[in-house]
Amino acid sequence: MKKNLFLVFTIALITSCTQTKEVTYQQNKDAKFTTYWQQHIDYTMDIDVDVEKHQYKGTQKAVYTNNSPDELTKVYYHLYFNAFQPGSQMDVRSLNIKDPDRRVRDRISKLNADEIGYIKVNSLTQNGTAVSFETVGTILEVTLNKPIASGESVTLDMIFDAQVPDQVRRSGRNSKEGVALSMAQWYPKMAEYDFEGWHTPPYIAREFHAVWGNFDVKISIDKKYILGGTGYLQNPQEIGYGYEDKSKPLNIPNTDKLTWHFKAPNVHDFMWAADPDYNHDVLKMANGIDLHFLYKKTLEAKYLSNWKDLQPKTAELMSYFSKHIGAYPYKQYSVIQGGDGGMEYAMSTLITGERSFGSLFGVTAHEMAHTWFQFLLATNESKHPWMDEGFTSYISNKASYEILDRGDNNPNAGPYRGYNYLVNNNIEEPLTTHADRYNTNAAYGTASYGKGSMFLSQLEYIIGVENVANGLKKYFADFSFKHPTPNDVKRSMEKVSGIHLDWYLNEWTQTIHTIDYGIKSVNGKNITLERIGQMPMPMDLEVVYTDGSKENFNIPLRMMRGNKPTTATVLKDWGWAIPTYSFNVSKAVKSVTIDKSKLMADVNDDNNVFEVK
Image 1 (tube, one colour):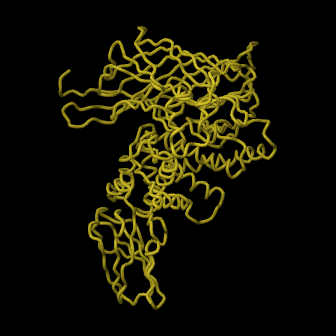
Image 2 (spheres, helix red, strand yellow):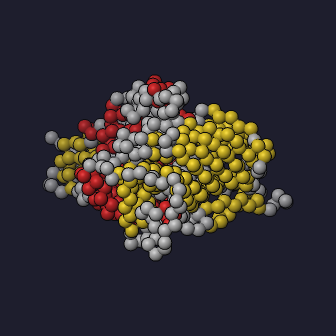
Image 3 (cartoon, one colour):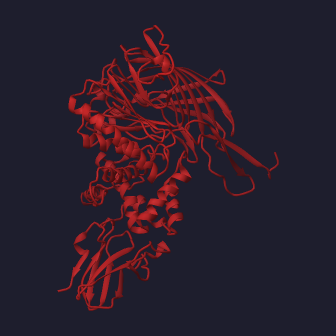
């Protein structure tokens, strides 16, 4: 092919839940840029479950398309269940970290052979020819017989055995609430390869990154079990519980096992849960989305009531997130009792069920919001957990305040208190820290959930509430069904607001610089401010005059190259390297207050108010 021709890379992206659309990306060989690309995979799996032994056998056909400009000589799979074995890196990390997760602690180290988890790959072929592979902890390293060329698709066929571990973290069997099977991260899962290369971190505790694709999954299991999770059930008449079309006759096989057949289009994970005692309720929304609720019928009456009350509120949450971020693109969503707390998955969530209504609603709000922040906007949450947990916390807090009518207070005030705890105790680490490599779980949690949510709430202070709201919608429109990076959300906000934000992304996520501004002096009609902390910010001020009148001022940061929409008097911008800023007002001053909104994360409020004596 001549150099001046285009090399066309085709990526299969599904823009709706029901059909696949081919989207073509081009790389101009003469130009000095490469347009966005991402890998694609189609899984077909047949799983046979032995519920007595808590084991299953599986076959997996994976059609993997290399949309990268690179030739691949190896591929890698995650084998997450291998983490639940004594001596694994997850086990050792939990035994050595200062503040281990209470759900894990030393539990993995005490698992017996019939309680551990594992995925054992028995055979693997590439286009019908056996390939060499090695299991290294939670990663399967595969050396290909023939490199996968750019633009080429290959078929990888695998046979594997697995055992479901005791419920320790996210996945497992026989949870504390008696849920039989919580099947998350249960299959050999292709690692993601992107512009940064392969992403193959060992499974230590948290967070994932995976390839977009389609799933066709058949699960054969004891006929007493009821299943729910990712995807659309393809054979309801052969299952006959809760899914059947009343207009069609049932055709349930007279066997000890039933096969549940699910298809899930354009997702990057597949979760399922199973229990013989599940209630299964369906709430049909006016927009055509079905909400499924699976929870144990053996729950106490108060908990059963909470699960019923949750259902209309879940519909309100679905409407809120669709309105404020972007339309939910699938036709169903499932809330399922299981797991060990709350964890998001494609088209579904696992949450523990023995909760007060407030707790049950709050966890559902958070996990459903993850559908947008990490599942549709599929960030690498191992590297950028603050974009996943933080943005989810920000929008789910707002949704909860509106739906439960909690008043006009800042719904994201809590994270500011947590952030100050990090700073005051000198345990803060930059948001660029890998999710597994924080020195403490407390530092990870407060940073990812709290400081991550503050990235957006503080941005309301910098560029304005309306710009942030519109910026989130643009972010979704531009990057849903992709793998956005921190720079992508920054650029979406810049394009909407017209304000430069590179300084903000750098300071807030890549450093632990703190914000501390103070009012240095008020002499007559002259006001002098000072920057004490290392992180610069624009300033909002309220000045109260001796005659009782008030005036608001806005001082843009010069690096912003603009200012937020405001009714305040906009003053000359402030260069970040200049430690003080003075300006004159028209009347005698009674008091000056910095940032009455409290959206700026100033670590010292004591110098933010000046009363003239």
